Length: 224
View 1: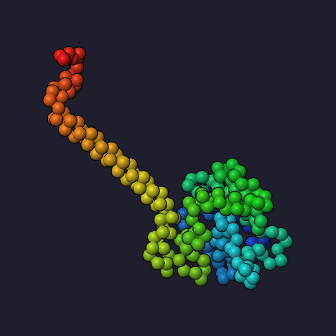
View 2 (view 1 turned 90 degrees about the vertical axis):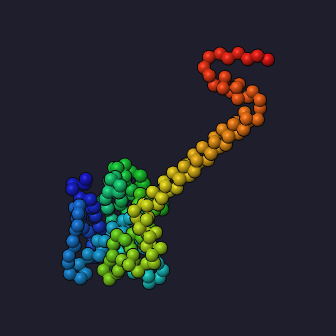
View 3 (view 1 turned 135 degrees about the horizontal axis):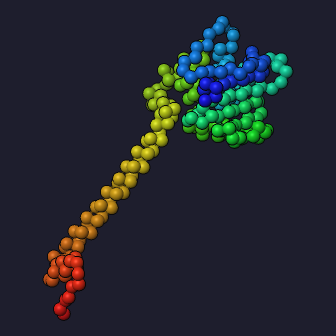
């Protein structure tokens, strides 16, 4: 564990936070309280930003989605440390680059072309879950309702299966069923072979006697 914490965040020029100390979240339930505008939802948004990057939009929407602080002296810089499937993972993301460490080993270097590579690897670590699925299951920002409540049953089921990685279990069941079918086909083929041999020996005079002698231990002598 990272000093008893399962999640750490450090922000620079993100929304209202020009710079923060390391914010640690211990295991279990954490309640964040504060007045309106204190930055509670911003902490959740920064975590989502670390995992998935900035939301895309055009025109005024793009400006609204840009989490960079007004009059910030520099670029956005978000550091996030967490555990995924028991592995320590560290993500450092800015507007145009991202770096990724897994088990303290550098996987993606922070260069201008690193965003897409980091996004692919983080997505794989998360089991392929999308931003929309993450936001509708793990978090509900202020003023939002969890998407699972309003989604159709089929959509809700697909999201839950992906979050819990039930598709892995489903694929394993399918593979096992296929192997059982193949084994059953082999047994059936062997049964047909035995039946064919039985029919053959029944139709040839003396064939059964020869077959019985061949199946006995020791040397068998035959008269022409």
